[in-house]
Image (tube, rainbow, N blue to C red; front, side, top):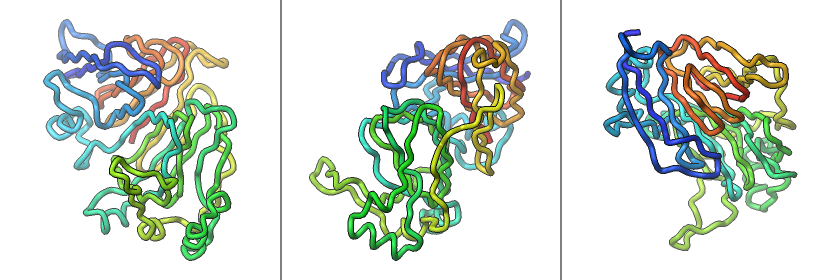
Length: 317
């Protein structure tokens, strides 16, 4: 393939709510005597907030951002000033703040040239009876502001019952929040611009309330968006496309379950592919993986060869 094969792994995959602080990194050159498998960078998350866009390390302790800046050829010379996707496991112990994100245009103008934030959630687990906030019911900024002022949160917020396997696309302008007792896999634009609408009057360590961003939120909320009623996914064979937009595509791949083949090849003609094993165990391009393992396939990887009994989420441009 004529490319360096970067191989990064944490020592053993761990469940979502556990952690491992030990890691091992190695780099091998493709060519004579090297593995013929396509290029993969791999790891398992060190904790519930693992981010494939921030935490991959090279042998010298370099970040993925450094690899993106210095060796863009590994990513098919993809354009951009930062690695364009973040993939996170979010294990919410408590209700997270009610928030909304801007689109690219608003963020560029008001947040020093930043990107906006488009994201999506795949529910990995949820306590019985749990809900999630996706959307709101006000029809104008005036109505929204009044309902907030009067504390009419149960009327304002669109709460949806959830279960493992549900999926939600969160476009800019969508009011949203993850509630305690929920674990999700989040794929998103590489941006952290967030406008907090409500944080349950929680105080910071200094005793002050966390700052809110109501005016910015009112500027960006999409008041024309109809609230969702369900996140249920209709599965369609071994590969189901959960979301496809101008920022990313997210697929759910099932191997060896519910009539899906125990061996499967998935073409990956992308600058890179973020891979998250969310259930089961198996082999990806000759490497043993299990629930909690995350991998990064580089541009030289033309296909993923999967076998075993597992579910895998792929995120790519």
